[in-house]
Length: 512
Image (cartoon, rainbow, N blue to C red; front, side, top):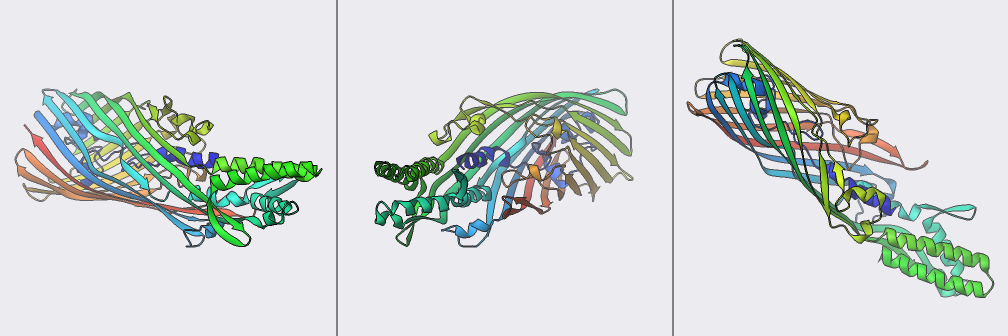
């Protein structure tokens, strides 16, 4: 049981949200994206990220975009498990709700380009992965499921198999033949615990590159992005209590204390039974003492506190073909190999567990950012109107950290439109459809991504000839993902997953 509890905390790393894009990629790197996410074939200063080869067609001079986004996301899991009715502090029945909240109050980005002749020299800074803190104030259903199942854990003694509760009660009953007062001790089905988990993850992306115009219509781009990752994961399962019944009176007792005292009691009376020649009964009590010792260890407070840092570099290539009415573009970002190094201060109870090796002080963790292919097109039937389309493909299966039998690659499809009402005001809107290729084995309350559609809209206000203010709202609507898993022949757990995501953005574009 202790290993399963630790596994839940260990997997906190994959609970940190990305706001738009694939598993570990943020594509919302400008407010222009929020106004209209189909920017892969557009010409603009935000093309430093979305279409770098096309930035050369923006015009001569220095171009700068400064953006700030405010992101709020929730993750809600409804877990239905029969044993939840035994929770001594939550009497809401078998269905319990677990909610995580992730906020990124200020998500900044800066995009710059200097166009001189046939060359465009570009720099970009943005939060390309993570970008916030996610908290589950009451832990997760998978944690509670393990604690609630403790009294029903199957153990073997000789040729027989019993739930722990039944075995302990039988052994306590056997003590009554030695001392009748001891026969009144029993272990009930009730439980309680405290749980919390929090994760913070930031991938800082620094991009340098250059585009060159090969002809009046064609340009190419070569660049590279350095990612610096910084993360902290903190979680615990504490104050695990079990129901102790003594002479018909029930009370909640600290698990580790209860089972430690129980082990001592069993060992004490095993010796008494041996002295009386009752060797078979003594052997059973010793077995009970060993089980009690194991349970005392399993119900100790468990705490994980791990900082991770690391970096990686990957090249980027792009191409753009531009005419008066059409613009066609493609970009390929290579996989970024990331290895994050741990600096940990975990509790001693978390040491010595193989599945927590990845969080030991000094160890490294694979967190690759997948390669990404984008295709985009923009069509302008009239000068004031621009119609956009885009496609994203994330090569998730080529990363080190994912199980290839559980996921395939992710695809996104984008459409948008922009219209100049007059010289002062521009309006735009667009949408994005995200489709993950994954099966139930990849989904859990610890880590889940859900198919979604997003929409954004906003304004571009030309404050001066060389200054534009961008205002936008962006929202993602997620499908509900329902799944049922067998725990035993007679019992299953049902989970329903969903999320929310809302973004507000303000940015200013300058031309010098």
